[in-house]
Length: 441
Image (cartoon, rainbow, N blue to C red; front, top):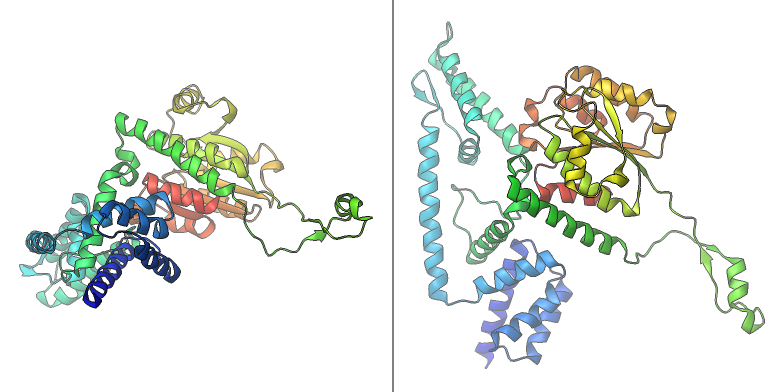
């Protein structure tokens, strides 16, 4: 009997490790509760066993999905687990050989450019334009006047710096990050990795670049947005404890204690209401931004119930006010943009902000938060930076939601200047967009 208990305990703790690696936050008390729950059930009944542990550990819908996938993958025969690990090793080796073949294209004056293992996969994951630019740099440098083979270490250092920069700018969402040149993970690590991949595959619309959405994706995305909004409102409607000091509400206390002869057994307090931020939303509706701005606006209108969305403007080479109350769905936003005087015009952020300033001081004070929806591609970028710095000194904050992945921001002119006066977020997918909005609203 002791061996059976020990074996069960080991399996249970390994399963907990899978959950943690897959992104489920599990506390010590939850582990103890789940372990204790197993003593009250028939552990040979798989469905009952699964339900009992899930009740103690999985707290959100996301965690329940991860838990279910992990449970189904973990509690299988040991022979099947071994077979799947062997398949992973073969898959990893195949990927490694493909990467080495790509790296063989990097040559300087006929000599192979050495790249450390951790950066080989970074190069392999680049898009074709980035790869061509690196190869073109090597070709151009190799043919330079008075360039000798002794310059190879310097060239390698330049390539390494470029790839390191790209790696640092890329944001990975997974708790697991294993490359083709990494060691094969533990059994728990392997299962967790497969769980994450399957969850992503099932929710691929969440992680797909919004710029690549087709018409079918758009309808699915709008349904997801509605679910996000419901979840957000439910989470923000719950009572939250506060450490802020409250003042005694004397009038209410006396009224509530009349039946005791005004002896104050039941004290009532009041707290100064929290001042809500006022938001001004600026949506770029140039050709490259039209679809993305529409999604963000749907999010903002739904999630701003706890805040005050003061005004909404669309802009391109000028600015145009829109009535958000008239926006019933995605199509009405499109119609409103198409009928506006700024439709199909280039982006000029500086001029648009100047137009907003002309509307008066009401849009520039310390309780206002600006939310800019744009890819930051604009004419007169230097003037736009200076104008935003001027506005930042007058308002509470400027949030910038960018549909371009962060790894590509280095291509945007004056992006560093924008980052100095704005909080810029990578919102290239619905998953990233939801988390950015959830953290700031």
